[in-house]
Image 1 (cartoon, helix red, strand yellow):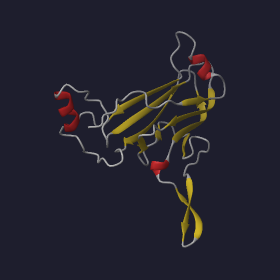
Image 2 (image 1 turned 120 degrees about the vertical axis):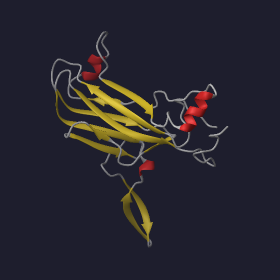
Image 3 (image 1 turned 60 degrees about the horizontal axis):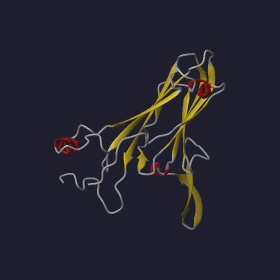
Image 4 (image 1 turned 180 degrees about the horizontal axis):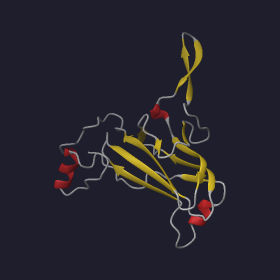
Length: 182
C-alpha cells in the first residue's frame, strides 16, 4: 500500500504593495501567509483500519482529497492592496476542478499549466481537430499552480482566506483502492 505523509506539500509565494512578507519575518510577528493541509479522507474506513494496525491515520493514499487553506494576514500597520498569493500543486496531487475559493468578493483566481510562468482564469491548450489546430480549455489535471489576486485594500490585521482541494493520483498501474486491506 502506497502511503504519503501529509506535510507541507504546498509552498506559496506572496506579494503585495508594501512589504508585508518582509515585515512578517521580524521576530514576534505573525506570519503573513500560513498554509495548512488536511486530509479530508482521514476518518474513513481505510484510514481507520491503518490506525488500528498502528499506522498513521493521516497518511495519504491514492484517491485521498486534501484541503489546502491559505490565510493571508496583513501584518503591517498600513493597508495593503493588490495582494497576490500563489501555490504550486505538488507533482502527485491533482487540482479538484472548481474547488478554489476565497472569502472575499474582490479576489480573482487563476491557474497556470506551465510551472507558474503564465496564469489565466481558463488556461488553454492547442489540439488538432479535423486537421486544424484549435484552442481548448486545459483539463484541471494539467494545472501546476493556483493564484489568488486581492484587488481591494486589506486593512492592518485583516485576513484573506483562500482554499482549494487536490487529490492524490494513483501511481501508474495502481488503482485508488489497491492495498486498502493490507
